[in-house]
Image (cartoon, rainbow over all chains, first blue to last red; front, side, top):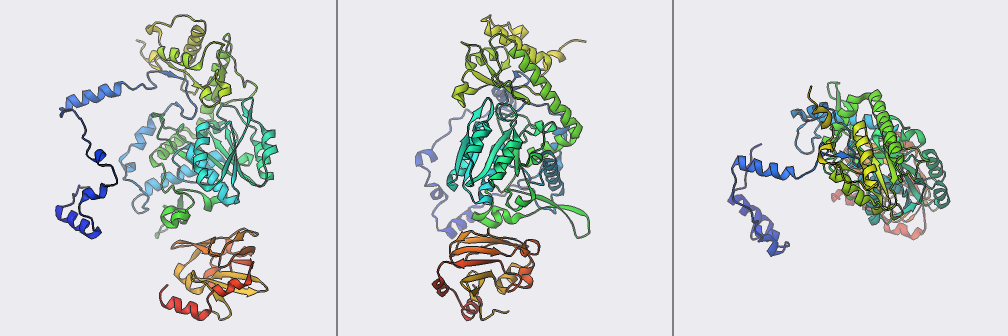
Length: 471
Length: 128
């Protein structure tokens, strides 16, 4: 599309119409010193100079091909098959904002419909929307739905749910005058008896994360029975990769399942953008937030796709809409759709199995080291686990020393759980080779024994170590 | 267009039929015509306390979605479950099978705030 600037005459007409003297007057609410600020930029550069400049700048960023990373906690490093980039960057999908016109966007709408179908199959629920911003906001929207649906104003959330997700929940619930009640954890999982004691008929929903923030598996069926006995909804926040092995939330009675689809073919970037998913039982369909693609037939009887049930949405129902999300996370939902289609059912199961095996190998190797232990070892876990460090070694100092060896360690838990200040959360996905895991274990051993750090030559540089071998 | 004499009306196009301190509420023939084909109705929960002029149900048509306001303060005592499967009853028979909910009023003097058929007809004619 051509760029068509306003003419001076047009600008004058517009200003006259709204009764404003000058365009500058429209910005008067911004303090003058900010409006008059000048940018101190260096002079113009040639193309090659500019390319060099930005190469230098981007070279200062670290990336996961360069480090051996064991960090998860909400953002995951999974292998991304090249078919995803290849298909997702096709011209047909590169449309402008809001590609929802059915007459022009059948491809995009079909992808969204397939995304929804895949989310329903993964979660075992009836209806899914066309995606949310991320897992945290999807969870918060689920709580809002529960408050609306039950006309109750308390939401119970386990302390084993991601602490940042809980912070987003609190932000979303505050203006509704709904309260968030936290349920304590016991040995890495929710204290189900505490949940049972504290729940009553004023509770709109009970929220669990499966696997939880510590990587442990919760007793989901118990949650379901306790919530439903009091007429509360059960909201399950799930890791989509884990569903290759674990029961779908619909099977254990979840009314709403949400989660983050970043692990499905989307790189960790630098912590975002992510893409959330949201699925419900059919009875809650009209209360679902956001975009929903539906299948229909066109005038000539051909299968076609449109956005549907839009009367829930902000552009129709204004302030009484189910949510203020009036869009979705299209590009990343597209990538997730290609990812799941490429893997297939069997592929996802195998992938989840690899995560399970590698993380258990890593956990066992680390905990065999003197002074390292797994405080929640009684609980089954998926691809993350908590490790307590030897006395005298803090997570921060360990991470600094690992980093110098080219390893990104786990998440120090003290920031969110003061009682776990000596522990960290490790993540091991299918993307870790045995060499990489062994390199971590070896480094942990050396660091904990106070040995000097390894020379740069032995630094493990991701997968590159194997590829670099000469034939 | 028909506006039965025995009913009360509101400016937001609800009708009310009063019987033994309970009122049955629906939307007028004018409202259903403006909305065109009704596709979904979200009814209030039985037992819910509602305030006069507060939103208490949602009606969705092929054209738009609107809130239905409680014409008076009171408690919802029953809702028309038939509308869940057959929302088109609102179009076919707005004053009969298309009724939406029954409200038990706290205070019968509230009825004085409503319109009669003549007053409602003149409001429509003025183009409200």
